[in-house]
Image (cartoon, rainbow, N blue to C red; front, side, top):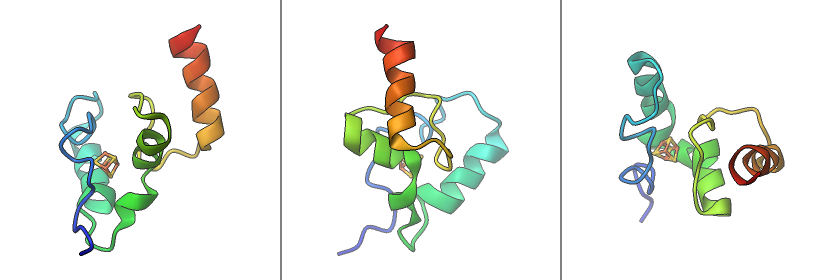
Length: 81
Ligand code: SF4
């Protein structure tokens, strides 16, 4: 059965409100991605990043224009170096 919300809701720092962005932006992301009954959460860049790398850094927003390769590169530079 198709999930009506993102499967990562309970572990996502953005969903839990642990990423410092304006509250209305968080609500907008939840509406358009996390709780979207059409399954749009599968397009969320945080969802895709977590599935690929096993974690998602705070700078990645659901509608990020960065490619997954660009996110990987940024993580290497900022988190591993
Ligand atoms: S921000 Fe993305 S990964 Fe996080 S709960 Fe929402 S849809 Fe899922």
